[in-house]
Amino acid sequence: MELVARREEVRWLREHYPASQQRACGLLQMAVSSFRYESRRNDEPLRARLVELAREKPRFGYRRLHILLDRGGERVNHKRVYRRVGHRIAPGFLSTPKHRNGTPPL
Image (cartoon, rainbow, N blue to C red):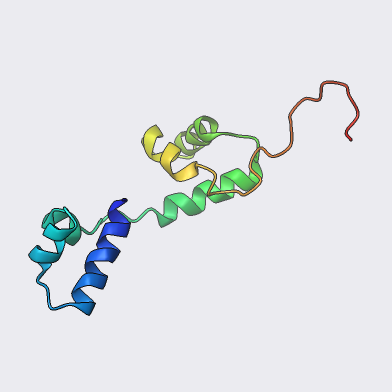
């Protein structure tokens, strides 16, 4: 079970039964610190910039998008770009083949 799903399960358990946070987390074999964790990172500006770049250059993958970000002055780790790009940025990303093999489409 993912962490997000476990958190939801703990919340549901606490709403429907008189259980403490520690008890509910223990039942689902989850650390209380993981339940309380809230990320402080805001990736919206990075995500918006990646969407913009992906729309300009739809064939570029995360590596090329990372290079474009670097050239634009935004220092971002390549692994972070990889996690953000995925297939979530542009649906249909790389949906058409770059080269055809010469056979007509059906």
